[in-house]
Image (tube, rainbow over all chains, first blue to last red):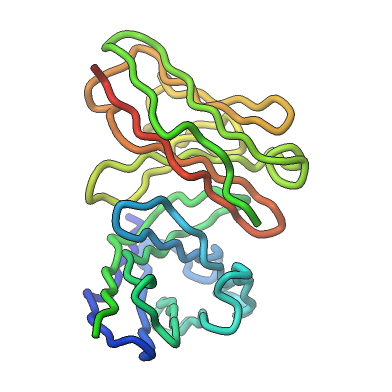
Length: 118
Length: 108
């Protein structure tokens, strides 16, 4: 069965970076785009970007351009999202989600809480 | 890219039908049949309910249906049940991907 398992919660200081992992199993990792979506406490979903695990090609939301880097390691079927120059308003749950096509995000990770606090 | 516009809240009684709207522009909802809907219960990851405007993934109840007219997409839930109480988000392709602000559904 398809599973996306994310790394554990993180606490970071402002200005630091965080790298969240998303390990995929139960399907061909390189066959589906992986998207990253975040949700601040009490707020809605916010799209951050996507990576093509086959080519490594990425597309990022304009808001995160220059601060986010999405990578993958096909040998271990794992996608990564690194966000730099963290601010307090980056405190959120970060999700990875598998994308068969279009805006169809059919499987989601369990979420990773990133807390940014001095 | 601005977020799609959804009502903040809707409510209905068990057995009734409700519709949640999702208004975008001619650059997103109006241009692509790539609208999806997600259900999210508190503390849980979102769940795909509708994709490509009106298609239901396997396992999703046929009480959930989607449609689109112009720049506005809609999610209709018929025969409301207590477990439908959740937040609902629309999503559209727009060159990139954009979500709506979310709608809280209360089952009275």
